[in-house]
Image: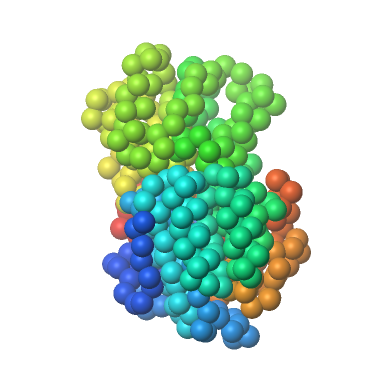
Length: 367
């Protein structure tokens, strides 16, 4: 825990520099520790392990889609670490948040002969065939943020434990609603493995604890990680459920869209979920004028950084992705590959962090 706390403190020190824009030669394509307050900026990340032979290698990250600010920040962190190691970072943002768009990108990377692919999957199972092609070509495949099936990956870089996220979100719904009444979920796509895992964790909590028996989940809506569709889905929820108390949106695109709708309309419905501080600052407050009392997230730049360190460790043979493997993620500290609930393995960044009126101002300019 001490090493992960140090990781968060050091990471905060460099985030402001990262968000001002990253130069360099990365190829661009549009086809629980508590964070520390922003500190003095540093110029670059610590390089990969001294024993790493990352230099001369090519590491790719495939996000869910172009125009997703959360994914863009993951890509920034990934690029920073890869370039600090002397390797080439290839950043691929598919044109849409679809399986077909990601398959096209992966096939292109196979043709390029990259050494590693780290992907935020739009569908857990539909990418199997093309990922198998990549692995047969000698490419190390891992995932971050949203996983692929266990037999399609070496390991999964998970931003936080699934149960921990589900519990944090469910407790927020309980708190904000007063423990009873109607609530709804505004998710990303219906195939998004991370969203579905968190939602299932929330359902399990409700089913196994009488504390939540007076809460009624009326609908799970899908905004497909598109701002306009998420706006439309929020408005539809308000229209269909006049007694609705809380919307929980475990997606940064969805929560930002819902927050604006609720606040612009002066709705009594409150919001929680997972959001970027920079996008949610104007909506966080504990009075009637604000739509979101508090929310959660982790540092997406650190998710990308850990994805890069994991990719380097897989390529240089430090780890295979087996349970019990350990590696050093630069200044982020030591990490261990652990068993995941789906039968595969994962590397967990840390616990979700609560953003509320008392701390949102110091984080809004960070990420």
